[in-house]
Image 1 (spheres, rainbow, N blue to C red):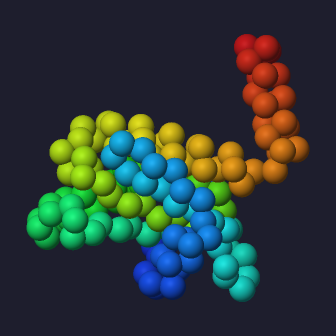
Image 2 (image 1 turned 60 degrees about the vertical axis):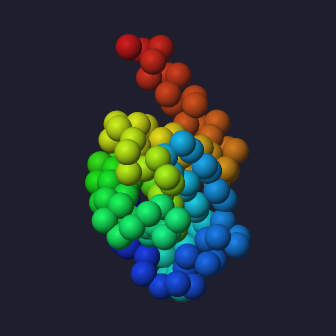
Length: 136
């Protein structure tokens, strides 16, 4: 399970927007790309974006807090090591049920990770999971 740190530099956000993969959901958008750090740390990095289009500062802050809380619950165990992720709030993030935000985050992480995992690792994971289910 990789740990994670927070993205703070604008250049990282811009790099993910231009060259990363994106998965939109009802309550958030997740962008991801391999990290461009000089030495691999085995750590995933995450950033949060809320724009003024969402509303006034208290609405943007609420959206950011909700994204951070969902990421704290589900991000560490599902994120790929040495990858950068950006969570972008949408209009519905502030008013949506928190469980829906968590479901959307899990869905988006799993979908975006499938794009980056090589085929042989996917096959190995499927074979090991079927073996576990057939034994039990």
